[in-house]
Image 1 (cartoon, rainbow, N blue to C red):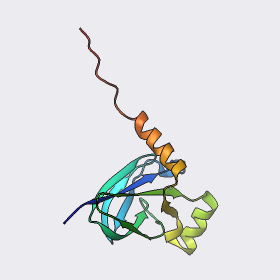
Image 2: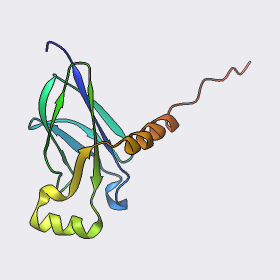
Image 3: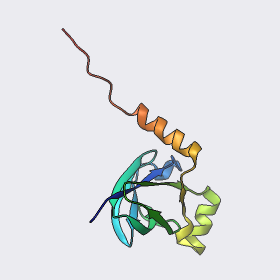
Length: 128
């Protein structure tokens, strides 16, 4: 690999019955990592065009999207669960419509950055 780039996939909270299971990140047809509810996964890739989709724990998945990432850059994506009615309908009609994968908006980036900041461990204390 001549250079490196990253794809960061963040996942929204979703429905209560999905929160305890990871979603699999699939890049160019291969499993590349997993992401849990209200978390992000940052994955190293080669620069260029890549096909990305998500797969739910037991069933369904997301739309596939192509992202172009330059060397040293990060593509920011969000995966979210569709509403309950659409989820059931999509499981029957179009399993790839169970989840929605899209480019992260500036507002979503602020939310996920805030969640990540809250999860940082506290600074060590001097107990002497």
